[in-house]
Length: 324
Image 1 (tube, helix red, strand yellow):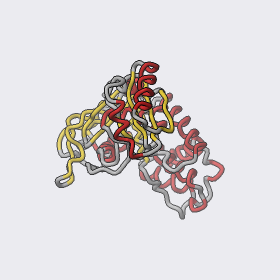
Image 2: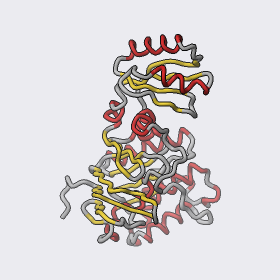
Image 3: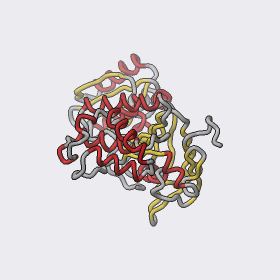
């Protein structure tokens, strides 16, 4: 019998390659029960590979992965009965009604006939789909289709819910409603593994976060712990002319509590600082002395985007050569 305090997810020294491309390079991660665990990394960092291994869709080349102490390779059938998985794209049949889609999933999950209707009705209600349950999915909006896909992942009452970019392309209202729903699930004891392009989403939902880069874990902790790695606050300067970026970086060197980081796309330079007012005044003097035209200068609390810039010197979710 599995102890209730055993981690929900245990990833130990996991490696996975696709030909000469290394997707995961000896990864170690532990996820406690009843929490939201955020997984961050640029496209190609290894997030999707890890998610597919957890969902028993891929086998690791080496290392061990367990869900509730069940090995995902040796006890894959048991693992599948414990997890719900919602991928980046919706997997619903347009020519069936919402209810019929969920009934198919319930039967595939092996629910007894007596439980199918109960399970379907419950998830339809929880995701506010009951009024449209008997309409063809072909008539659903994008937000309704995403809700239906999430509903399908909840059939069978999983103890672990894997959400891979769950609110991509949704409107702000639907996104907020789903955030509230995810929080309710966790309060009821479900563990959630979340990957997302919306850093605000991860910041607001995750109890702990792991940052991946080229298949390796480069940082882990609570959102606040990771933000503290930037030095407490962030000085941000936006230049008027992108050709001044290099001069601005050199002007800010030696100030703050870390090296300045250039964001070419945003035409800005950020600098971690633990002493906001003196750093701000010193930066303003240097910028003025060098005649650099700027559009904005200020100090703010760090974001998870700042964390990633500090850790890698690159923005999150831009093309890169790396693992899948």
